[in-house]
Length: 435
Image 1 (cartoon, one colour):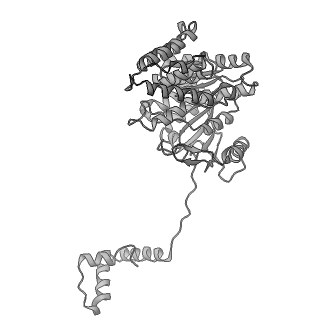
Image 2 (cartoon, helix red, strand yellow; image 1 turned 30 degrees about the vertical axis):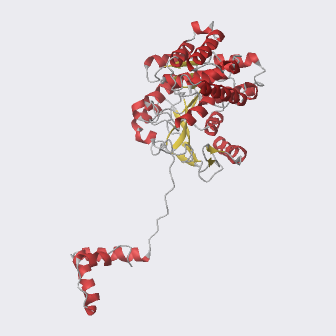
Image 3 (spheres, rainbow, N blue to C red; image 1 turned 45 degrees about the horizontal axis):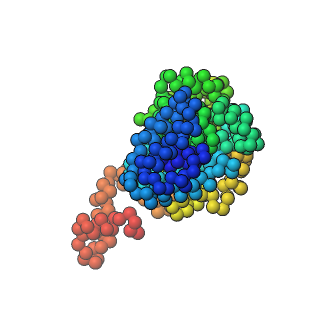
């Protein structure tokens, strides 16, 4: 993935990859990194992320070392892929997430830090829910391959007139996007993702968002909006990461976190500590299938407002039951019929903005619920069930053993047939599904 990403960046920087087709892997690898070093010669001295890209890149090996045909095929594919991500037509797609999810299908082990990559339509929904604009300073403190930052970049650039507005693009890249990632591999992919889209300066750092030093880094950036899908397991510090972010962003910052439905209920003591300083405004429960079974949990978007205590304010909640996407063989879930883009997203943005307009809407008391309250299944009882309960109660009241009663009844019923009862026949007669 890193090799592909760096080759794409080199191609964007003007390297004529078609001239590299006679090279074996080692020579091709050296030629690509040389192009990157030359392109970022001035920046690499001061830009730590470029040093980490090189460090991770140099670790790459290949089992087709002397296979020039394989390298030739690789170059052809890089050139072909590059045509689809031409920055002039770019609309905020997270290229590295697409690569990662595709490559990840063939990896035998789980991701190192529990990464689950957010589907692009949910990323855009979250960006719009927090009402972000090009004026905001957006943070993702567990940025993975950079999905939220790439989408934010695309939306901001579009708002400012597109890639042709070079000054606005530079300002957005330099001063409005901030990311933290603990995994060096994913950090490298996020950096390459930004470089593919002609950005070499976005504020990405490779660090652990649980560290105290990171609190100062976040505070120094004057963050006004947060978009995050942190790792879900406790061992990766999900509660510490969220708390560090909330405590150190600007006053009034809107923070959208994608978390398991019950995460705040399970960690209620921690969540209650947050609510003494911050407000949980909205909970948007998402369809169970958005991760195509990869996350293993149901998720919701939790929208916080930083540095405004919850008090007794109720929390708005709603449930997006389905997103209209369909599973396409070997391509994952896609909005094949445009149902999400044309109908469902506008509908739900309206509901979430107005906090009304759908039968799933709820208002929750924070002292009682910190997750969407699923509707109770209607309770039904049949006449047969009712009679069974009454009989059990009468036997209990009269001190009659239920098994002795059942055996006597069966003996009485079968007496005229001269059938001898044993345990196997009794179990058949007493089968709950046997009328």
